[in-house]
Image 1 (spheres, helix red, strand yellow):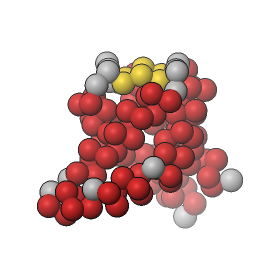
Image 2 (tube, one colour):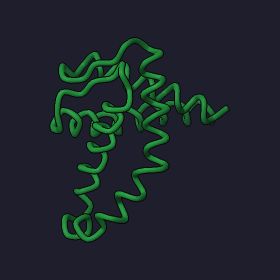
Image 3 (cartoon, one colour):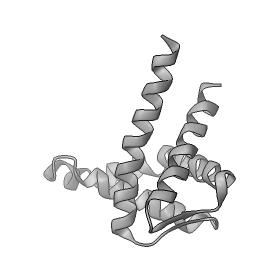
Length: 115
């Protein structure tokens, strides 16, 4: 049940950011749910491989290269999903940063409700 709630929160964050950023488009809330599911799958399967392959660059940049990996995951999701679009790398980078912040805020509200 917790997984479903987290996916819905992530879908809400994707939906809100798609309306705030001009370079990001998503086809409705169902499309945002699909984006959240695909991003979760990519973060589980592809991201660890990319992190291991780019470990020297990540160490040299003190972890900032992980932002680039997040943007690449967003661009890969853009290629896999028809109802989701990102206009370029810099938009994907901004989207990934704002998505992380918004997800943290929304999930912190969820944790406060449990207490």
